[in-house]
Image 1 (cartoon, one colour):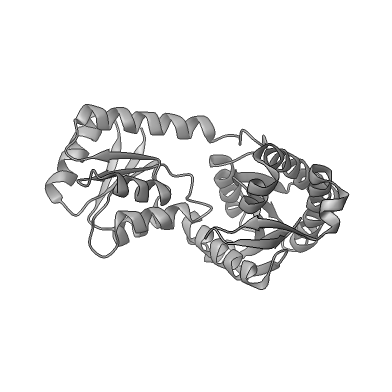
Image 2 (cartoon, rainbow, N blue to C red):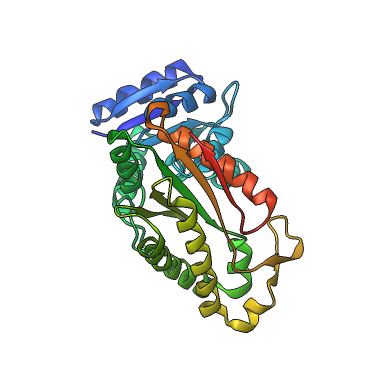
Length: 306
């Protein structure tokens, strides 16, 4: 049985959707606005999030951005339900990270089909990342839960490749794909060289990786990862490109500029099991530490605690 969370300020719509989806064999929780949706996710992560676009306090778009901006909840599939069928609304939803879109009024059979398809997709992709072959999704969460059950402090290292979109746009997606695969191998090798027995490495998705290690070895091991990543870039684009230290690219606003090359940033979150809140809370903290690291410049390794 899958656990679905549906946020909509229309009580009749909430009741209708829950009745239909429960009849299809799902467990369905209901909330009336976006703030309640995020609170509910903190308490229990759903297998699928269904969001109305227009809600008081926090819109479906804002909720979607928050969920997809958190490395530990971004894998939750999001289906947007809305009365706005204009193409601009759909584009806004997809740009916020929504995985599918269904305009009201809709045929309940189509809702069931879209829910089934999204759940099938997330189950298929949960075990291993297809690019790197590293554990992802549920495997990462299971490792963190295993560490919590041991009641011993540990460190979660959230690793991000700096300026990777601009890098892919400049050097091509074939090379970018090769870099992602090689980075996965480099991180595994770094654990062998500088980590502790039982350390875990996973691939959240895109250019985001995660390592779970001991507090004593985490920083040294991440610095080993950063050194090995520079070698990955050197093999991908050549010594001459790396020697230049920067490459010309275009930022997310479309402005041409130069970016540092071959840098890896990391947010280190020291976890005390006694103070544990939730996976979503850990992800929000990791995203915040990563933002602060990015503001300090490419290649920054910054620590925090949960």
